[in-house]
Image 1 (tube, one colour):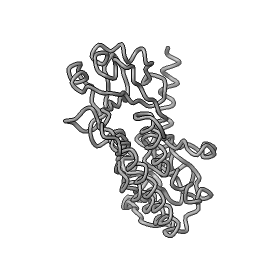
Image 2 (image 1 turned 180 degrees about the vertical axis):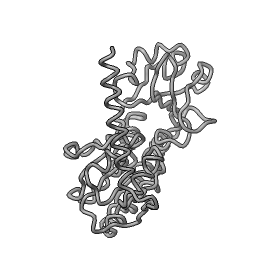
Image 3 (image 1 turned 135 degrees about the vertical axis):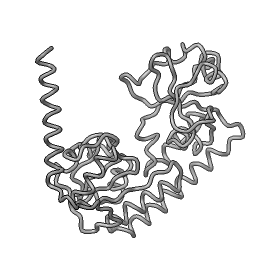
Image 4 (image 1 turned 90 degrees about the horizontal axis):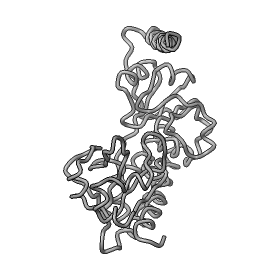
Length: 298
């Protein structure tokens, strides 16, 4: 056990030393560098799965030198170095690939790490995030402006905008709107579900359905009473395993969920998380696939 503790302490020391080294490279008066555009950048880090997808959709992937761990598509991007999870970035990890610019999705962090990265004289473009059609268009336009390919971005944004509008209009044609409960995880027998202001809430709306829970934003563990009151027709989950996964049998054995329309029908939809919740160039297809699973057809 002592050796395990020593190894863990050693790793922590290395991380701390690396962070100190990064900080040491900065001038005491270094200022954070925010940038709207870096058209000449050749070594770009994409932080955020949707940002990575947009860069590829624009045909600018040759300028990428790294991605964060949420960047899982397209498959060929997996050969890029992984600088860590977007919400748990380390300055030394991001700067280790010697970038000359960084595209960073809004919400990346922690703030202290982002501040150090911005003060390392590397231009950082923060890409706004909102979970609707307009938000995706804004992402594409922001990335295109940053990379100096505004014309290509305008063309892609127009195509994606029209595609999502068509997919959403087709999904909205159903008179009866399914009530969808998005479950992020089921640990300790408690359902962690999506309220408003989330990617799950946004994709459910685009697919012509309604969020079965209301009254809070973000994610929250639901009481048995709240689960039963939500009366979902369908449960929606990401297709993943590990501690956050749950089998259909485990899910519908939940005493409150079992008595809902979704529980009685054993109605469960699973979709790839990056595809379902990415809000990027593939969202129109995700809307069509979710609507087909909810209402039938395609």
